[in-house]
Length: 370
Ligand SMILES: [Zn+2]
Image 1 (cartoon, helix red, strand yellow):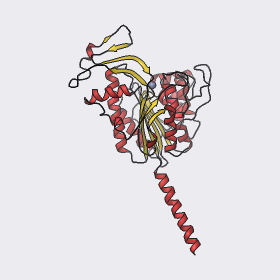
Image 2 (cartoon, helix red, strand yellow; image 1 turned 90 degrees about the vertical axis):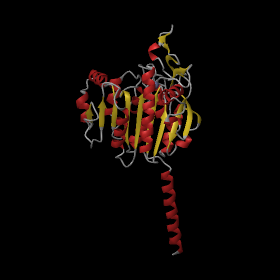
Image 3 (tube, helix red, strand yellow; image 1 turned 135 degrees about the vertical axis):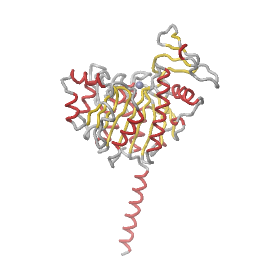
Image 4 (cartoon, protein in one colour; image 1 turned 120 degrees about the horizontal axis):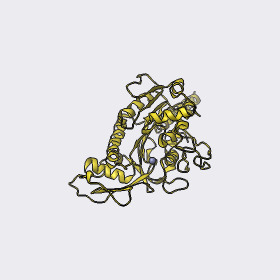
């Protein structure tokens, strides 16, 4: 009798322990990727949007670290190598999408690097990417495809139809409608037939997607759609899976057009805040950038708008450099650290200076997969 009571007690304690351990784990992971959204852009976006520093939600998240962004061979990364590091934990060469550094851009494949999205598919979670760049461009592509050159957009998108794990990505939404379809046709595919043949609702707008669709491909002509509505819709679809989901949302924050870049940065930050308010404590929410960008506030008075006279912007001798009254930019990526900001289970590992590859390991251990 005594023995069976103590056995029951041990079983009960084990149950409590495993329940507590599970509560510490993230069920869902949402990765917000500000493409080229480095510290200078966040700094300028807060001042542009709110006339004060540190007003962005991502600047107030509970856990913040600084990620270096180099690729395997260069100090300054492009989006392909930058995102590969974040979603696979391995650095590769610029231009290469989720293949090992044995790849030679355009010429030779490297080994496919398994992505966090593929780990999620393998375990039966739902997965998605949302982007206001092309849905086949480097950042979303690095989540679901493996190619030796980011320009191979037809090949990239066709890999959605031949997943390596699970039933493949469930929710794909982005720009690039015309080019993706053209590039797929060049490979001898009928995109419409091929995409629908894999069970996807294929549409050009969110309104055209039936509310009960579980697998969705939406391709817009341009990136100027409501990214917030798209993000919430992706969560609606993916969160039906009781096992959880992985979602990557990208906003293109390159400030080659300064006004557009800063407005997008402010808008993206609001989307992250809305999402953080919506999701329960079982979701790891991260914001980071694949690389920084050469934008700087070089002057300005605190009681005046940051971009007081954008119409007076004049190019300097270097055609790629633009100097506004208070802000200048050089049309290039830069090599300094970007922030990683996080909340939810596993977010406490985001601190100090870290490598971009560490973001992958932080996500993997948050969901308990390593
Ligand atoms: Zn980028």
